[in-house]
Length: 157
Image 1 (tube, rainbow, N blue to C red):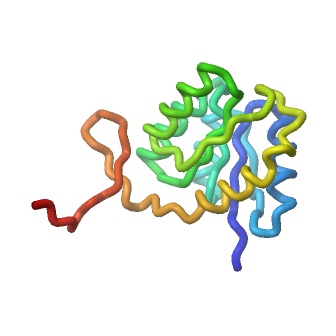
Image 2 (cartoon, rainbow, N blue to C red; image 1 turned 120 degrees about the horizontal axis):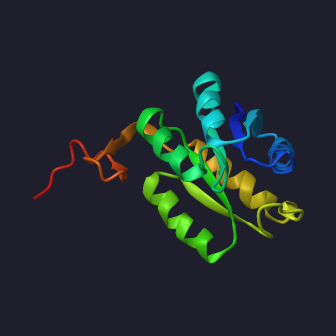
C-alpha cells in the first residue's frame, strides 16, 4: 500500500513539528512538507501535490478558511482542518465544511496543544480517510462559494 503524502500547514513551528511527528509515526502516512500560513500552503500544494492537507484555521497572512476557499476553487485536495476548541472554533467548523473541508479536528487545548498526542489516532485516521475523498467531482455553484458533489448523470424525476 502506498503511503498517503501529507502537507502540514500551521503558523506555530511547534505545532507543525508535533503534527508532522505524530503523522509520521503512522506507516500509512508520509509528511512531504510543512507551511507556516495559508499563502505558503497554497504554493506547497502546487509544488508537492499532496494526497491530503492538515490546515490550522487561525494563521497570519492568509488564514486557513480563506486558503481553503482558494484550494477548492483552484486545486481541490482533501483538507482536514484543525482549530482550537472555542465557540468561534465551532462556527469555523461549519464554515470549513461549507468551503469544502473533508473533516475537522479540534485541538484539545487551544492553539498550542501540548496534549495533541491524545488525538493522534483520530488525526491519523482522518488524514488517511480524507486522502481517499474524490475531489474531482466538485462543482462551484455561482458565487455561493459552496462546493457540492457533481451529480451529472443522475436522473431527477
